Amino acid sequence: MTRAHRSGRRTRWVAAAAVTALGAGTVRARRRLAALPVLDPAGPYGAPRPPLPGWHLITAPGVAADEATVRAAARHAAREGLGVVDLIPARLDAESALGLLRLLDPAAHRTDRCAPGQGAGHALLVSDDVHRRAGLGTAVPPRSTADLLRLVRTLKEYAPDATGWAIAPGLTVPPPDPARHAEELRARGLPPGLLSAARLAGLALLVKCLVSEPRWGAAATALYWLQPAVVLGPARRPRPAGLARHTASRPLRALSGALRTLATPAADTPDAVGDETRRAAYTAELAAGTDRFFEPRRPDCPWCSAPEPAVRLRTPDLLQGKPGRFTLEECRHCGHIFQNPRLTRDGLDFYYRDFYEGLGGDGAALVLGRMSGTYRARAEMLRPFTTPRAWLDVGTAAAHFCNAARTVWPDTRFDGLDMGEGVHEAARRGWIDTAYQGQFPDLADRLAGRYDTVSMHHYLEHTRDPFAELDAAVKVLAPGGHLLIELPDPRSRAGRLLGRYWLPWFQPQHQHLMPSRNLEQALTARGFTILAEQHGAAHQPNGDFLGAVALAANGLAPDPDAPWSTVPATPARRAARSAVQAMAVPCYAAALALDALRTVVARATDGGNAYRLLARKELG
Image (tube, rainbow, N blue to C red; front, side):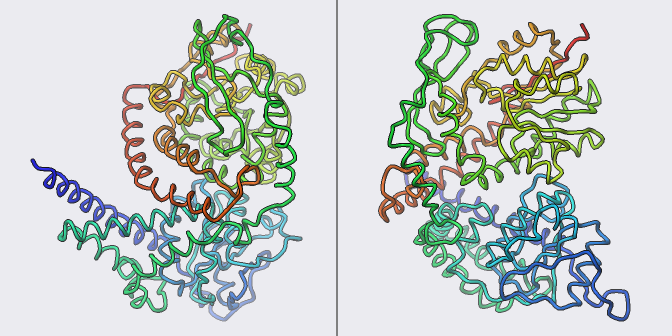
């Protein structure tokens, strides 16, 4: 077979895949649209009545809702048991409607307690209870669509299974402002540059298919071009104004919109204005260098004290791009992998800053909010052995696990412990019953014997002294109680294949990565009996190849607008980062496919990138 024939065959397969993906996306969008209820302002109640008490209507500037619409929304909320209703204009423009349907699955998101809040960004009806708990009484009214998009994400956290969506024919909204599109994407927790690069890559792919494989290329192009009319046509709602005109000009609109977003610097959008105070603080801190953030290198293994560990890898901070280089070493005797030299407490504070909270809070919440299946699987692991009554989740962060685990164990009291302030926010949301902020070993005596279940999910590897954490768990657990631990598996083949770009190395945050046999021995020595061990079932999807692409792209072109960046944020550096992200789009697509295959193999062979252990504290 000649090279030309092979190239043509590849193009044909790519074009067929594009048709399949576009067709599936169209069907999915129609299904999701059909799941959205449509408010009936007249209702079945005869004469108009005043709005139901106990509700607050919050709108973006320029949005108007008549009384009948508000009454209908309040009736719908009361009937469905909702605390928040996002009102979607029936005349919402086509591209905004399609974008919303890509992100929002009304049926699934209603019951998924961890799903991030998504909405149209125009109007919200909020109950008194949610309004009060979210502290909106003294909040500044939304000044833009982006503000309302951020607000619906917050309110979904306060009403995790009581947030709904409805099409509101009586809602009047201003036309979209293309200049604020990037800001609105960031408000949804999405990266504008990467999405725009993906859109440009998709348009280029359509052109290539159209030229090289006209039959399949024409089918893919036609499906893309006509998608707004097929999804939002006259027989369906919402019914965007100018749908035919928008459909006809869709490729041109997509091209100009993507180019405009790529050309918009992050600092030009109100929600990404550089915090000069934060930048000045990082500049002052970095002026003294990063060497002071490290302890002296130790000559032996912290797990078994064997001498002369070997270097496993050296890497910069590929997660945030903060200055510094980090070394992981491996014990030649027990296989324990640890950071050496280890970060000091000040060093940990520096590298954790703006990751889970602050600047990185939205991104972390978006990732954590997409792991509902993993959270439920962790909780289900206890089902053959016990019915938990009082559960302490150590290293709970914002308590996403506890929030999801309530669907598995609705009668269990879930408490959370973490170093960050987010644990108190989790209590205000109702995701946990009691919040403890501090170091687990420091609080162990105070909590002694209070819990029949303690969990540590991707926590132990972050700690400075894993043995002290296990000793604390012994104190806190009542006799017969259960300890559930999940960790990255340092023996994963992907770790050797991908080197520094294997995401679970997670430098500089991970201090210790221990093989499962080491942890089993440590638990047995503390009076635990191992009840169950999972490897394939604990595998983290998209944690290998997709993570590697993200780390590599970020390492090649770190964000020059980050407040800790040591290089000037010039237009050339911003353009270079956008170019790298654009070139990475096909790699992301390939990585997704590889990770899907990797997950199937991991489940089948019981060998993934993580493992779980469930142990019981014996009565003696």
